Length: 187
Image (cartoon, rainbow, N blue to C red; front, top):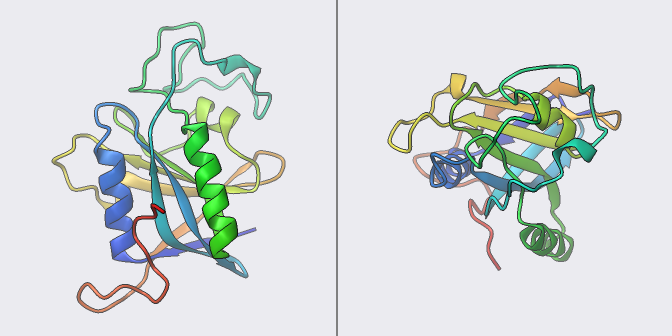
């Protein structure tokens, strides 16, 4: 199980900018990189469209307990893209092909919480992919620079349990990327 996530400031900036662009809706992106032991190394961000629709089948994912209540609220309440996201399946397939061809891993997904804390909601827990990284950024406005307290990362075990992962910014020179880092992926 990974216990740490390392990324460059360039990757962090690319990720947070791609999530902020969707504000006031939830933004989403795929996270690409490598794994070395207990450390995930994010090397790139694949920005995605949020294609959530009101007719999205929210109750058919058996992942986690349905008893917890949080900002996801009652599943029968009206929702919008400001509190829901779905990664465009075509972009997911394209990113998977790219990863396979380039020898990098699809580490997981990131999304923003425009109206909430950077903590996994009950909906996030129900829909998370097993054995993947989940990144959440609280984006209060597109003009506000997020701080360390506005972001969080978790590893989702095979059983769906969320385990916190520490976020480590790689110390590079003034704007020099780490070898292999490509902040944005787009073939």
